[in-house]
Every structure is written in structure tokens, then in C-alpha cells.
Length: 282
Image (cartoon, rainbow, N blue to C red):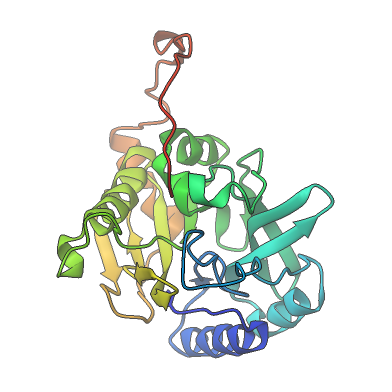
């Protein structure tokens, strides 16, 4: 889904619960929410009108009261939701997958853009997990820029990948129309490319609306293993609903050309890393 989620955890919880109930009424078996859906994303780090600097979003325990409450509402529905996690070694932008049985999967954002590195620690792995809908994986926002992330999940057996984002529109070259925005174009291209190259069902969620000077464009969508967008919210908040059997959807394309089976890892030799320039902002 695409929606605006602010800093009030109670308000966010109610929005998430209402959305789950509406999705269930329409037959949804999987509901994916954006990054930081419980408690909101960071304000832009360089926002001169905010004094003193805004504190990080409120943190939530993956096995705490809020998640138990969501598991109860989810029942048989598989739900993926983003939140800020407190750990002994720092804060993480995290995602949890759950249903009425409890936590099914957990992911900490691995790839942090420059603007998040002062606030969050980086996760260390991508791992698929089993659900009633089949084997799944999750990633968060900037993770999807890196093809190795989705490939690691696909090789671990994921037939569905949930991508939870707080992906803003471009700030350096803002476009008058959302559909012409550079960052929106990147967001949409990556969703389709990752689904196609790994032959998986790709479910993408994003924040919408404004937070500080950040403008989030939505564009939640469901993409099939052939790279076709089955449903999209466009720039509007709401749900992108699609009827797809993930277990059956991945078989036809993989039986014709299996991108995973046809790999030649021995030919990809990893080059010696070279010094690369460091970005200055998000």
C-alpha cells in the first residue's frame, strides 16, 4: 500500500489495522506496508526550520505489545510492516512479517543512504522465510538498488519479495508532475527489473504525502515474475490489489528460461574493490 504515516504510533496503528481489515474484506492474503509505517520516517536531516533537531522516530519491540496487537488483527493474513527497532548496538530501520501465529520473518535495512547513517545502524543479511503463501523475503527502500539483495533472497528460495520503502521524490531536480520525477522513475524501474531478473512476485509499498521537506510519491504496486505491473496506486494513497498465486506464477517463466538456474557464477569473478567517491546526501 501507499500511505502517509507520521510520528504518532497510536494513529499509525489504527491506520494499519483499518487497512488490514479493508484488505481482508477484499480477499487479500498478503498486505505490505511502507518503511517506518509504525512511527514515521526521519525528517530530512538538514532542515533549517527545525530547532532543536527532531529526535529519531519512536522505537518498537519486534516481540512487543504493538506487534502482538497486529498479529491478532492479521489472523490468517500475512502482513509486512516497517518500524524503527531499538537494539543494544543502535537503532535499525526494520521490517517484520507476521500473521496470527506470530512473527514469521524479520529484516534490518542493510543499505543505508548517507542521510540515514547518523541515525541508524546497518543490518547484515538477507534471509528468506516460510509463510502460508510460500517462501518470502523482505527488503527496505535503498536495499532494492542493489541487485545482490534481491538475488540473495531468490537464491534462498523466495518466490515473493516484499519491498517496503520511504522513497522520496527528487529534491535536487523536482519535477512539476510526479510521473516525470527522476526518483519516481528509478523507483518504478527497480521494482520491475528486480521482479523480472529474479522471476519473483514483487510487492512494493511506499510512503505518500509530506514529512518536513520530504515529499513521498506513493507508487505502491504488485509486479509479476515477467516484470508486468499487475496493479499500482500511482501517486495516490491506497492499496494496489492483484490476484496472483505466487507458487504457480513463478513456475511458467522459470520453466522456459530459469534466470537462477542458468547463472554462471564462476564467470562473474569479483574484481578488486577500487576507491569510489562518497555521496554527500541521501
